Image 1 (cartoon, rainbow, N blue to C red):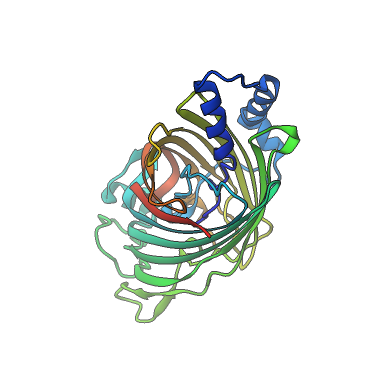
Image 2 (image 1 turned 90 degrees about the vertical axis):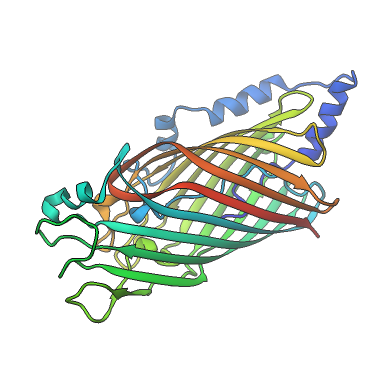
Amino acid sequence: MNFADQFINLHQSRFHASYLQMCYGRFVKVQTVKIQTALMILMLPMPMLMLMLPGSQALATASCGACIDSRWEDQPAAVDNGWTFEFRFDYLNENQLRSGSGTISKLGAAANLGYSQEVEQSTLSMYYTLGLRYDQDRFALTWIVPVVSRGHTTNGNGGGNPWDGSSPTPGGGAYTSNAMGIGDLKLLGTLKNVFGLDHFNFTFGMKVATGATNQTGTSTDPTVVRDVPVDARLQLGTGTTDLIYILDYNEALGCSWSGFTQLQFQSAIKEVNNFRPGDGYHFNLGVRYFANEMVTPFLQLNTRWFNSDSGAAANGGNTGGTHVYVTPGANEKITETISLYQMVQLPIYEYVNGVQLTPQYVVTVGYQQTL
């Protein structure tokens, strides 16, 4: 999981000073042209933006529902130059079968493709993420180390024979798997106030292939009595090196409010081991209310588009889609250097290709400390 994707509201202290100046009647020069320019850049129509980004393909999502990305908190970054440490925990239980824009029963899913459609039972993922960030006036560097715990159960398919999808069938390829280990590391660099615009930041980075890709599962197919390979999307790592681009803009919305908008693109450089995860496009909007110094509630709207996975090892027919979430949360100031945060992501619209598992909610809690 990415400790820093939203960890780039880089000038909260400057915002607070501006709010105080406005609220106490002091004159604050608002750089209207700069703000409008930044918003125009971030609010470009998505088709135009995709033409500007490399590797653009048809929009889709990850296989097996394992694509849900809970990196959507709007937490304040370190106010002062120096180091910040963060630990966060994400919980998502993907136990809802979906097809298109609606849910689908196991019986309905089993009948797809002439009873050759895989019917998955559940995927339970927990992410324990460590992050370290170094800030200076004009730039920041971030290191992110995720530890992933994931359990998966699939009933396989009917092998072309009628079945109800509720239990494994002979020759259907059913299995269970459990794994825990380091996932793919991320290294990010942020340039602050780019294009001459205050509060407008550009982040570039890489996801490095450090997670294992050779996990096996325990067969529950009565005709198979050996370990079986786990789907590429369910491994601890993807095996690929990905490029990450982020544009972020945030601004005061009055004496007690601030808002942000963010655009992110992630793309694997090339296919590895016959697998390439689909490109991801992310668009986030959020507001934060900080009238209370100790508790800061926030609300976000998060949209994710994912391209289909590709390669011989990909489950191409059951990948790809769009996910829109509303995400309420809060940040609590414990001391001058320590804060906690919590949030829950709730889907308000989803469209998936084929049949996929999705979570009904995602829960995140975190701890942040300036060093």
